[in-house]
Image (cartoon, rainbow, N blue to C red; front, side, top):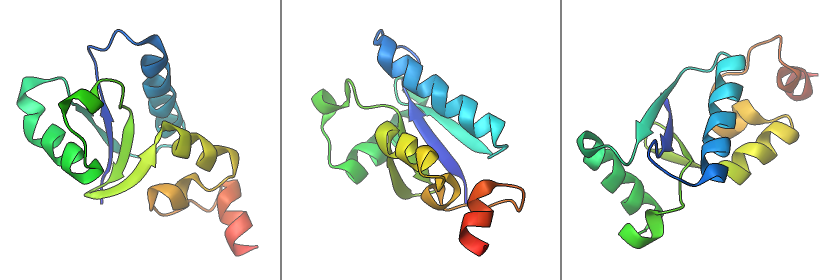
Amino acid sequence: MVVKVYVSATSGNVMMKVKQDHIRRVLDAKKIPYTEIDVAAPHQVDEKVFMQKTLQLDDEDLVALPPQVFNDKNYRGDYDAFFKAIECEHLFEYLDVEVPKHEVEYTLRHG
């Protein structure tokens, strides 16, 4: 399964960019492989439609929506859910990926 982060590279919304960048930094730091999907890119229209259908959105609602996180086709949540998972030490569970043994989350799960 592949973690997918839906973003908008052309957004003028500074907060959206900050949130998107934070997700990238965390995933990179934790060495969690992911694919970034730019919903503003014309060649990603199928992915944009998939995200909208999954979240039951129309084009107007999409303006301030990214970032959104999926694991393959399974919706995992928005930035706030991602942030909460970090704070509660259950990021790997939230993403539905295997927890490395050196992570605090592993110790919390397995004692």
